[in-house]
Amino acid sequence: MDLLILVLSILFLGFAAFMTVQIIFWIIDAFVDFDDESASLLSFIVAVGIVAIIYFLNVSMFDSTVILSIIAICEFAFYFVYVLIFAAAGRIMVKSSDLRNQWRPSRGGVDSESYHTQPQQRIPQIESRTTLSPDFKPLGSKALGEPERPKRRAPSQKTPNRKSLKSAEQLRPPLKFYGQKTYVANERIATTYISEVFKGRCLEDDLEVAIKAPRGVSGGMTIENRAADSFLHEAKLWSKMLHPNIVRVYDYSDRPYPWICMEYMDAGDLKIAIERSNKVNSKNCMAWKETIFGIIDALEFAHKKNVIHRDIKPQNILFSSDEPDVPKLTDWGAARTGETRGCTRTLEYATPEQCHGEPQDRRTDIFQVGVLIFKLLTNRLPFEGETEEEYQYQICTVQPPLPTSMNPSLPKEMDEILLKALSKRKEDRYQSISDLKTDLMSIDWR
Image (cartoon, rainbow, N blue to C red; front, side):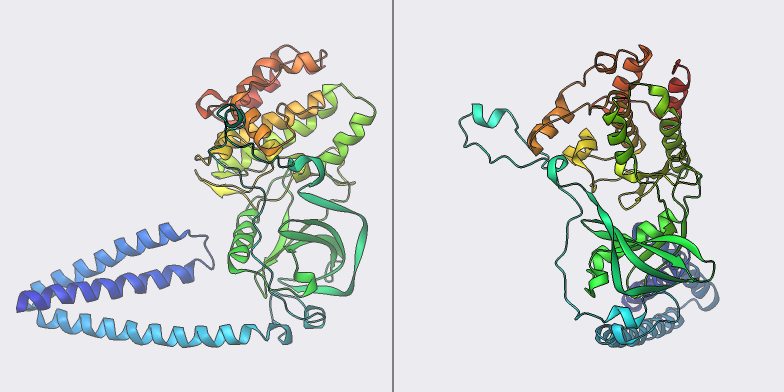
């Protein structure tokens, strides 16, 4: 009987200690960006330590299971009441969430005058971008006699990921965001599948800013929890990226939905710059040298922090009129720390491991930088197709053409550098962005 009491006491105590420490880590997560796996592992380790200490103290002091049983039962009862209280509080918060448009938060959020201008609607969960199938058969299916799959339009043709509005759309009434400072947004300047970007102004500093929020919030729509969590993760990660070639985050909040306030880049993105260059048929690689090294410097900084971007493309590289030659990397929604799977991505700049759903790391960014450099120096993409399957096949199996065959003015060393960066296997690419930078700096760009 004593043994049974001892076992049950240790189980109860361990459970109570584990959950108590888990709650502590949830509180700490508000200030330090813990992932769930790390918090659970640390909670388990600490809980085991607590159980071991209490058990051995009990054995050495009382040589009995009675005190341990009392402690365990008290801990479990305390935790049970604790859970009931939080469950009740959670239900109250859920019910009150429908009335958020009548509440003006003291810190973080949108002014009530603008937030409830339209009825609340629930928007469906939106997948960020096209998800590629890992088991595609772009050439073999027809040869094997299978019915021909309908062709799907490649996203590059008429469905760009970011839609830059030809003329800024005025917001009536303007949106107000409350964070460390107060911001007013009067114009919607861009929209994507999952977000919209507003031009605004900080009332305290009279500083022009850009504010990114989940798509639909300007119309009073509510946001799915998963989309809100992803947006808040981007805000936390992005705010730590302080570098001259990364768009700076000034402020962010999660009330009543996540939003990010950042520096306003008024000179457009790299895609626009490339289109202008194409019109004059520019072949001078010196024109893109500063842009290329600026993006590499930004990624070198991010990789030192163990952060991978995973969505390098011209639309995510911005310029300002104050510093027209300084490119700045934006949109860290797909960024993750360490090795990861799955990705929201643009098909034209996707990597073989993204197409196959394989683990991605820093070398994923290196491949995408290789595609970007290829595009800048040749005015063409290394992999092209009319359908999604054709793009996948090109990216995963076909070797890109030599850059010098498309732009003879390029130095011969560029062929070897870009083909290495665009290797299908991660092991065959540059193993660090610094190595790619070193080789690029060694060639004659004139």
